Length: 467
RNA sequence: GCCCCCAUCGUCCAGCGGCCUAGGACACCGCCCUUUCAAGGCGGCAACACGGGUUCGAAUCCCGUUGGGGGUGCCA
Image 1 (tube, chains in turn red, purple):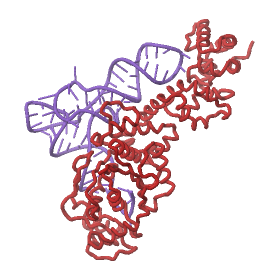
Image 2 (image 1 turned 30 degrees about the horizontal axis):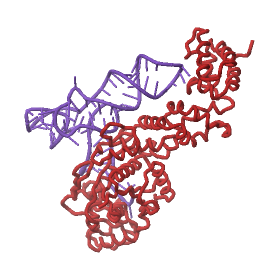
Image 3 (image 1 turned 90 degrees about the horizontal axis):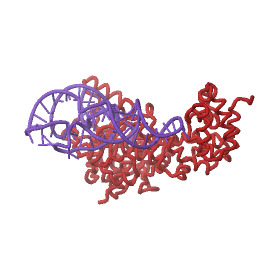
Image 4 (image 1 turned 60 degrees about the vertical axis):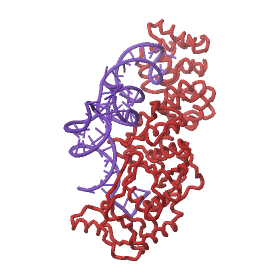
């Protein structure tokens, strides 16, 4: 039997970190054992499901590079209403499910009056109501015994049936709930391993009961992944945390960095090498290696992984991934010079953690005039007594020096010595005059690319008026 | 409340009875390198929640306590 796993998102929002991690682990597992990775759309909740979000989820999976084996034929639960309805009918006919017209408030009131804990009380179980548009259908759970399963991540997990309430499988509008559709489809698709978030652990016994009642074949193997938690060790939430994967894409994170970092949440390679190509991660991945405890999302480490991936790119590849961000640069598009950027690329790569930081690192190369940072100007020029002499000295020296990094380096060094300053101090006003900031890529290399005329021009503009 | 899960540095991961004086990574702090800033190199800080067992031996196994989290919808 071929190993077959699935990622089953509900299109109620753009793909978020937790779902992406679930998709990734399913994908890693499938690829590591030569199995199939399928996608299924769980849109049984018509109220909240949005069609365009299906596409957005696909786009994000594509961006992450998680290719699925049923592309273009992803089952949608909204198209299988008839199949589900038949199942519900047969369950009712067999006496394993029944109609219920209780209102939430009534159930609560009864429980309170009887001093019972919350949860459905089985009130309609023996009433023999007809299923109609004013009733839901509930599954009649066994009164005793237990439902247990072996979870690859957690070991044996068991639930007492007595604690399982008669849960809703069909709504009053006739549509079915996740529990039923999910159990039926996993069986129908021949899913061998169900990997999902731990937040679904409690629904597993219900799904299992349903599967068994509908004769859905044997139980699949379960693996409940640890939750990804944010600030305060709570499950990642839209309110508190930045959870949309596309936000990270827009912020300049590489898909391979996201994949690599996410793989490290709840799992780690045996050899301890954390940042590595995804092919190697596939080679190392194993279900048994998954850690059961919740994993905290650490934006700093993600940034570090991203920085490492960025640095590993060759200049051309770096230009390619930076292109969308460069398009938003403050310069006129025609003034952008690919060759200049390529020459500067390695220096930029070791200085940024995200692609969003790239434009500000190179803008002075493509702008007619640098954007002068106030604080930088104040520190290195206005409030620097040595600045006037250094700038005028540089104008003089740079006018005739041979135009390459080594010579510029030497000229600036000599200029500094003449004023009793080390190179670090000597280059500061020059850097600000030319680039607009006190920090940036190596100065002399940048000057080489900028050219003598532009450099002198900027120095003159920053230097005090002659005389 | 009830049900379920979890428990090693601040965080992630390693450890699956002796190799642990508990290892690696991120973050943080020093030092070195250095044209700024990075990158890089070197070093430092820092954890087995607690209490009982089991065992010659426990971070590793069992029980309990405590703590944390998840679920408890006509959401998934």
